[in-house]
Structure formats: structure tokens, C-alpha cells
Length: 169
Image (cartoon, rainbow, N blue to C red):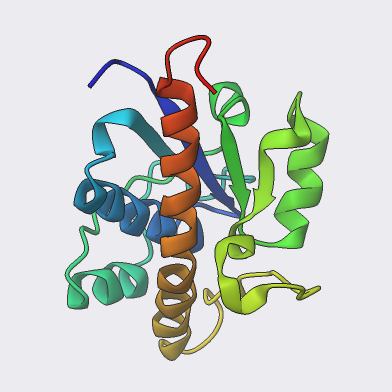
């Protein structure tokens, strides 16, 4: 396959729970779909409170228990990530902040908009499990997994469109 790259960045608050879990699950799903070499995946936080730290232990445990990788180092969102083809906000607060930062809001979407169960829903927020019970991390993973088929399908279509030779319709 050619060197066509499509970029996706997941964004939450501190980049230690929601966005890294989504990044790692999505990366695994891309491998399973044979798309990993065509898609660049990252995650970041709107704030830098946890920069350089590993993901939350509870998030790492839930990922490992479900067979996902769980190595991650938190980072604050960088300009290059703001220019990703698809920037996925984990909640409406992140979306508001990202709207002020991105040059082209066309690629900014709410993460849960890819979950068919949320079609027509006004609340697409992924709740922050950080201050809650451990069960919140299991619920978070369930929300992430529910959106994955739609997200992988969307990205596969985008990569397919980007990979088509000029002049084909």
C-alpha cells in the first residue's frame, strides 16, 4: 500500500483516561482491519497537568483485562495534532476548547457520534471516570468499544477516498 496517511487525534482533559484508552483501542482495531499503516493515531489533553505521566492505573488495568495494550505517556495537545484529519473530542467542554484552537473545524467531531446508539442524541459526552469508582473505567471502555465499528468504517472510507487515483469517482 502507498504512503497515504490519515491522522486521528483523540482529545480529553489530562490525557490519562478517556483519550488514551480510545487511542489504544482504536489502534488495535486498525491493526485488525489492516489499516494501521495508513492511519496515524494520537491522543492528547487540553491541559498539561499530567504531561509525562503514564495513564491512570485503573484505565491501564481495564485495558489489560480486555486484551488491549496499555502503555501510554500523557501529553498536552500540540499544533500538529490540531491539524489532524479527524480530531475527536471526548466531551462538549473539550469540543468548545478545540473550536478555539483548530484552524479548520470541519475535522472536529464528538467521539460518540460514531456510536450508532447515540444517533440523534443531544448528549454525546463521554463521562470522566477519574473522580468516580473503578466501575467507571469499565463503563468508559464499553462506550469506547461501542463507537469503534463506526469510527473504523468512517476512517476506512476516508483512507479509501484519499488513496483513489486522481480522476476516479
